[in-house]
Image (cartoon, rainbow, N blue to C red; front, side):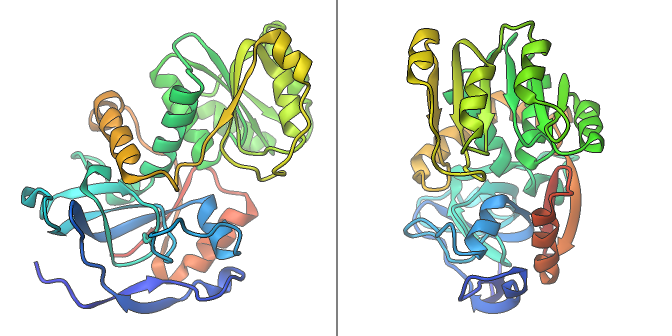
Length: 332
């Protein structure tokens, strides 16, 4: 396929507000060994993109300066050692960066095939939240059938994915949200309970919901003073998994209580992990979750789409916090 030498992209040279997200021209990347080149049809918008735009989250070494952690599109070229049969195939992919552009190069092993019935926009909304929730809630948090878990940000992309996966794998998902409307939206998606943290004490409510037993896992994106409160929500041998620190990067925790109840505090960041790890997760997802995508049982919760030229508006919507589900940029 003919690939142009230059492409449209959003690649701010300085941090700033949403207004820095303007379309510019950049050289089209070329796929390296083991990589494929994707003609992007849609790109997911995620909280790390906002942090990168404001200067709070630099791309890992070797990653493009162009933001965007997930895309869907068609493979148009392959590098050495990549399967040439992939050319022309519709795929979605997890990226370390580069999604806000017409083309992006990524390891072939980080791609998943787009099944019939799944739109490009829906496919672009899956990789980042799916990889994140799977590796943290299921692999680090060891959530299993019959467990109850507490997830903050219940109507975010992460929160809605946790609810959907909980339904598939027999896990009771309790979420916190910022309004009664969002609480109803979360329950409509399948959350067992939705707590409005503005009007209710989530620690007290979790105790009431679980009969004082506590939950098996907390998936936390807040950090700060939420951490000691989260620990109060855990049952014995509970696991606390941190995936972001929107409320602060430091916390004071009760060590004796952690010891007495045998609690585990862990966490991870996905973006800096190497391609080999992400390929391993993609392979695991292809076996455990992707059949549910192919059958139509798993679909991302969609909020709104914006054309690439309106990326600033997409970021404004994310920062306003009114969205339920995923925000996606369209490039076709």
